Length: 356
Image (cartoon, rainbow, N blue to C red):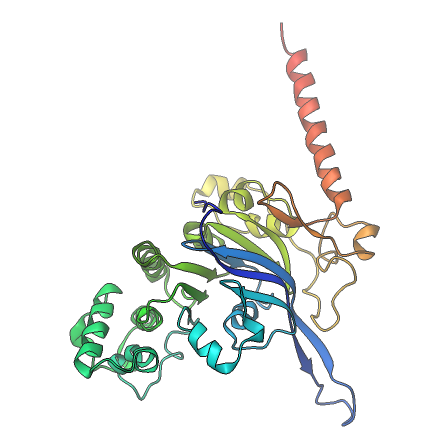
């Protein structure tokens, strides 16, 4: 899937950074706290009706990025523009109005629901905040209509979260997020805690609701197959940095960055013969500490193609073809081009020699 750039630009993130001050319990009382950079220099755009998938290892900054966009954590640098307005400069009153358009679905469906409230009260809570003029009958009518829309029976309205399965709890969370008809939903690993069969149901539900309500989605996951199924564009993150950004076709079929290639090689293939014969690019070493990240390219300590230049400078996040962005040094890009040219030249010569 691809989304035309002539659609309305909803969200623009420019050079976003999120840092946390960390103090070691064993350090001296007056010791200076260390800085953990959870997100560093991440930029992307999101258009109306588009789905941006965000993938990467656990701890790469995906959820922190989402929480910074919606204002649950404070960004330390960069810009977050919503319909051209700077979210970081908004007052609490302005943020309240903006949150009507930006809602979030959380990873743990049961933990995100108040156990003391029945699901009717949970789903109706945003309505009571943003549409207080509605009568009790009107609120109940809207809640029951939304329950039907997400696949829940309206007669379950008085039940409590612990009486539902994980998949049903996630549907309740989706209903709560959609009840005030937002423009964008941030889905923070919404299917990672669910069974595979339920994952497919929830993803298909999100796609159906997106088409029906004209939603834009930021879909965070570590399952590349799920991300490919739902996303128009994909952002790959590693240690808080953006590694690659492009359409689903570009990222999956024309992978540029070595880290993205390693992730793709780990995706299982349903065909046993192909699965046994496929080549897997293993990442060596452990994930570096975000408190003391490597100099230059943060991926260089695990990259098989790294050279001395990778330690000296951070590769710019540049465009490959105006839509496909990659954080790779120019020397490595030229090396890849030379290898492709050499392979093509060798194939041509061998083909010519075999001619009668």
